[in-house]
Image 1: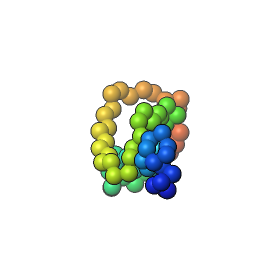
Image 2 (image 1 turned 180 degrees about the horizontal axis):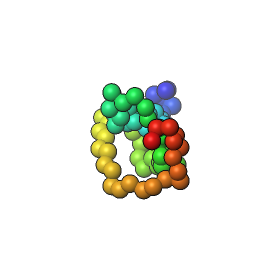
Image 3 (image 1 turned 90 degrees about the vertical axis):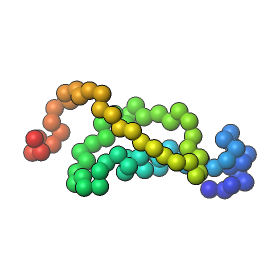
Image 4 (image 1 turned 120 degrees about the horizontal axis):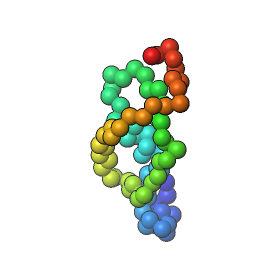
Amino acid sequence: CDKVYAEASMFKQRVAPGLMVVAMTGGLVVPAQTQTVIANYGTDRLRYPSPTFIGDTINVVNTVDSLKPRDGPCLPHLG
């Protein structure tokens, strides 16, 4: 990323791409011993309310407020 170009942008500095931040936070949330992640259900509602700047610290808090039945089992062999 070009630092001089970024200084002329609306953020006035370099930013981390939102999708990269999502990928990193996904890695922070999923425990290392997890063998399978079936889906990231709900990522169609993902929004980026503010930029993540180069050098920012990312903290993740993951809370399950409720569980809803889905359309049906996407992988019935997994139970």
